[in-house]
Image (cartoon, rainbow, N blue to C red; front, top):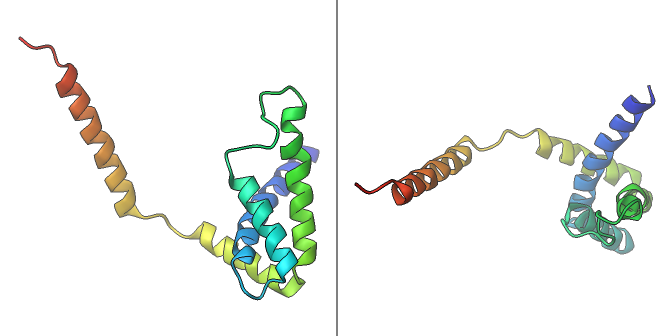
Length: 125
């Protein structure tokens, strides 16, 4: 029961990060909320952590405390009707289908790289 609630909360937090990124780029968002939303979204999406994860216990502190508290603060600073609009836009963007042409290009690129490696390392007779 508690794991399901935590999983749902984490999924909602991911959606809010995208919504905050959208809010940070919208001119209707108040300036302070825009700044905090941009910082929180950039930090959450960045591969660089304030405290590296390899440090035992403390390494995950930012992921468990700093990011969620930043999301809560930014969401509270954004007017509720705007936040609902940003959440709907985030849901729309995340539900959008991916590009098949882009996927085909990446697959072809990997196949070409594999063929080049095979030709390069093929035993010469």
